[in-house]
Image 1: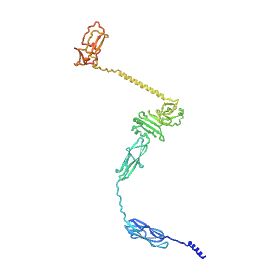
Image 2: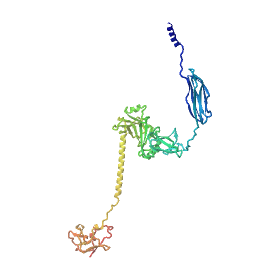
Image 3: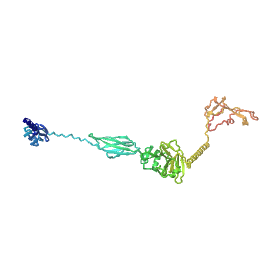
Image 4: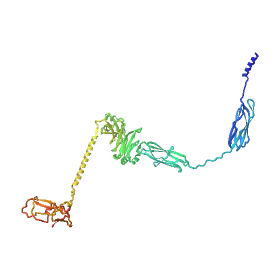
Length: 527
């Protein structure tokens, strides 16, 4: 029984009486070698593990390396010691435990030696001085010869639509810098971004931005420049809805065609005035504003019997130059095959006049020749009560044609009459073409009835006869001599006998040429 009780008490004592076991304790350092530069510092750590007690720290040569503390107390803790490098050389830092024991009550007598090497400061050699310039600035930027200022880190210029290209150049502040200019560049509508790259003398670079904004449209303010270019242009009217007499005269002088366009807020073309400088006339002032919305137009609609069409009010124009064409966008409302009539409406008396019966439609636009600054109506509807001004125009053109015809007849008659009074130019016959009298035979010297006498010209040669010129040179060959002969048809009573004579005046009279043509006629001589 007693043995069993002893066993039970022994087991109980195992749980009641504490039984603590500690790990091995001691002192340690984080390093045993330190290398520093003169004037610098470094540190190491001393640690007591499961031990408590004092620790001494000392330097063998404080002039070379000194420590931040001479001693410390540790209880299962650590301490940091700083070593200062005072001079070039070597020193030993000694770390030793004193009055230290582990938690198991074992004495700790550890000693550590830390070798310290203090090096001289490195000699600072500054980098070589680079005196080359780093300037990458621009002193001037020009676009098409115009100097541009820099705004918000970029050079910006806005140009009109007719400007299709620019020439960009620049000048650097530092003459030793190099610059690459964009030069001549084509433009698109909107922003065009170009770079000017500058490289400084030292080699660093900088990029300068140039932005040229080309407008979508030309404006009336551009007209002076446009007429100088000798081309046809479209112009956005914008808010400038008026042309002066001077501007119209410039268009006439240019002999080019200008379209003045009105756009909506979405930049869609509503209408256009087309002025051809070769045919348009001048006026004091031309207002381009046209109203295409009919407000309170019951009277107008009723006048046209509520017909479908296009209403246009030109009253604001006041005076319209002749020769202008007005184009109004109708889209697919009408086609080129549609017959469209154009009417005018008089507000004062309600009179309707038909001014055209063949309005042209091209590319979705009505093309109208407007001569009166009044309300107009274009429609496919025939308005029965409209006054037909097209017939008046027809009669007017016919009358003009008749007047022109009469004038041409008068001019033709005058030309004919003036030519009739002038003498005709007679061709002078050549000597060789005129028969020359070389011999006359059987000439009757008495009275002769011309009706009974006829003249025969013989081209046969006559012997013993020759023609001798006043100069003594023969003019014709004997083989081509001519002999005129008179042959009597019936006997002539009461006359003398036939006889030879050297005078042939009565025979030659009919053959005699004009004196001017034969001043040097050969003399007839008989051997």
